[in-house]
Length: 91
Image (cartoon, rainbow, N blue to C red; front, side, top):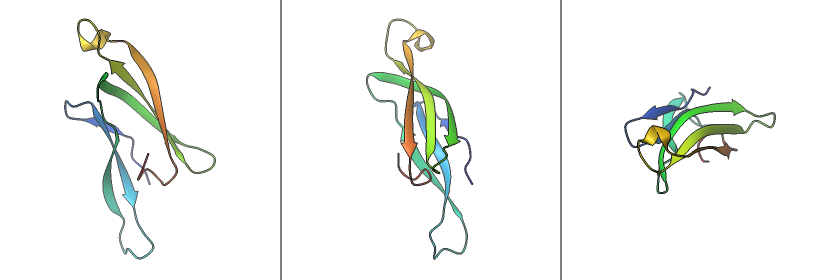
């Protein structure tokens, strides 16, 4: 079971809440995993979405903004993506 990623705090860091369980665990435990940290030249990340692909891997796409002139809402932006083959534990 997966929950949509959400933006937390002002650092522009996306987190994915993944439910992780190994064969020996009795209960599923939520796990917080950093997916994309905003580091230079990226000023911030925004608006993410995720889908499960036919092979079971997860595709996450979000918008990232590079530092530019003026306010960050007008910084140059582009779409970025990552794929996880282990249910969202690593990207």
